[in-house]
Length: 67
Image (cartoon, rainbow, N blue to C red; front, top):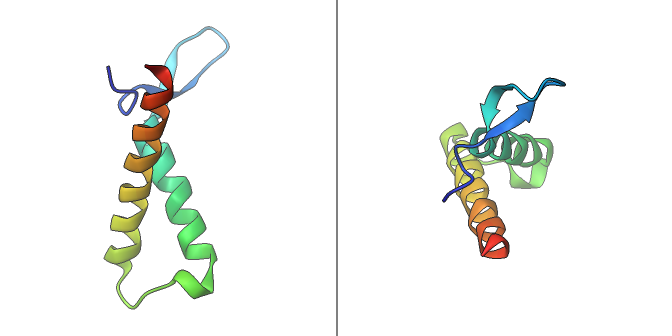
């Protein structure tokens, strides 16, 4: 079972809300990519795509540890 679509956040009562783990990881990766001037590229879609690729790689590694 993939963790990609699991909720990233739960409130005090245990209710899920907000982003999925994949969306959260991609947002954090994009933030890091855009914060580093050396990693900026001429096309924004490249950074966005790279963030999703990195989020998927992180999820893949996390799922290996769960097996």
